[in-house]
Image (cartoon, rainbow, N blue to C red):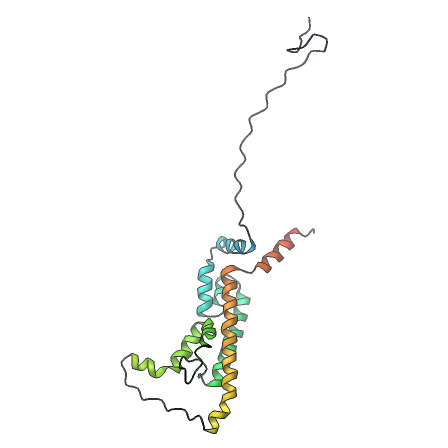
Length: 201
């Protein structure tokens, strides 16, 4: 007598019992990858033990120092040489007079662009306001000689004052871009790395 499948009518061949499926094991939870190119740049920096916020602060104090902190030595060195050289050229052309908050002698609105270079701007500001600083510290400095705006030497210096002002402003604004790059990374570089990974050898 043959075994019949449960619920069968006895006409077909005997059926073997099907083993029950093994219980499914839970897959390990995947680590969520940061969404967005900027977030991935920041995550990569943190994975190397670097803090983008500190890199931005260092880049503000001294141009290029933030990229050196992030391990981008060549980029930081080039930024330092170019921006500090450009800023120093502006100070040299104007004998340090292009960085000032004095409305009569300086350009207070241009200072908002120059301040992007951080420490160089601070040193230049201390030099141009040395009288006020020494007086604030309790000293008794002599008053600086007033400028004679009708003197030929002063008139001849005016074009250089404009050139130096422009150099320092450009250096400060360019350093703001470098600070942004140190803080949020370079998405373009990340895209190039992703493209290199997907290339077929």
